[in-house]
Length: 440
Length: 160
Image (cartoon, rainbow over all chains, first blue to last red; front, side, top):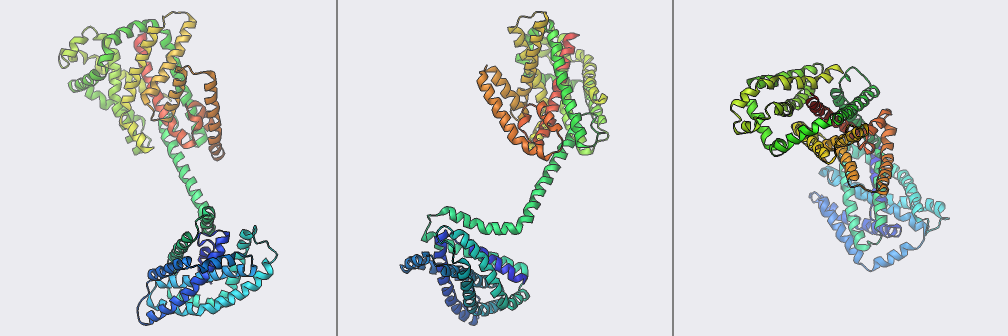
């Protein structure tokens, strides 16, 4: 039974959406299917013969043949007649076609699914497909009976879509009902022969190949109604998605979980960044703390700019001097040079650097090692500019008069003169920088 | 995300130095154009301008890599261009609309309502979802830290 379902569903799938069919085209397609089915039976005879000869049938060659046939069919003038005939609103006929289509598909499917399997299966498949036509006939009869009684009152032109949908349902039922009786034993045998996964895969393959063949036929026939094609293509997707509905929600929840993980990761990162956030558990509290911290920092900036504004008159004088002489031309070129030279020349500075690192890493005792590493990489490069911002600010007053001389001999006397203020002042600066972390 | 963060960690030094440089330059310019006076009103005016300069130099030191700095830069540019009230209002309306549209989801999804408060604090945060908001907040905090450090150094230096 399971096997039956898994055969039935793809059959319906391809039957529904198989081709690129508009409402009208669908009927035409049914005609084609019917003919194709006949042709396939003819082909089957050939295949049977070839199989009995011992050759394994290549599915693709068969499909190619089917395709060729379909193209031939499309070129035939009689198709026009068929189409016009099919377009006439004949409920019984309409109802009959899908059955042909689905069953044709089913038989084709059987061929397809077995075509990929071993030769043993092949033999079986042939027997099955050859035994199918009576089933088709019976099915058609049943469907006709049911269709005439159920679909007669419906309007052909506007209701065709809905009608066909209903029909599809009816088809499923009838097909199942009729097919269960005949196919059940066979399906079980199939199950016995092939593993489920394999058969599913082959079904899928055969489905897709079916679709492609039908699409080819359809595109050569009519390409006017692309939209309906899309919708028709989507329909099987919908059915598939229906099956995957649980999966869809699952993926949704997966995405949600990923998002939550992301958020918590960022929260952790922020926790390390915001002092005093380590003890707090819970996102709400942490966010509160973060908000407070940001606000305090913004207020600090305001306060400092206020202070600068108050202090401005003196600042103006200093800055003007500072910038006019040194800062601008020398900023990019001199600072690294000075930093480098002082770093190389000052053993005290070299000592200071690890000290600062020790301070910064000492702050993060309770944090996991990766974050410590991260912070260390942040703090390690920070230590250099800090020193040179500080040193530039502090030392420039002290060594302001001798700045030019210093520029000329960087490695000379000036550095030794500077080595005394150097370790002390930047160190206090860094302590100062480290203090808020310690406090909060 | 990860790349930008790594990029950040590789050269925060440049952010700091760039901020110091830009801020000092802005201060200098500011002092050049504005004659200094010690009246409280002038001080307040200067305070506003210094604050503005600090924000601007911080944002331009970070560059346009970050959403918050981009938002700040946009604000500054709008202000610098002396754009009309109409345009600003339009932009505000647009941003508000976008914020409403975008923040509906996170607001529904995340139970913490403090996110909105955080959105108000972080520049450009109105239009972010919660993940980006936290990311930007982290970077913003870092930058504010450096800003505070540098400014404190400067204040200490000049007031001493």
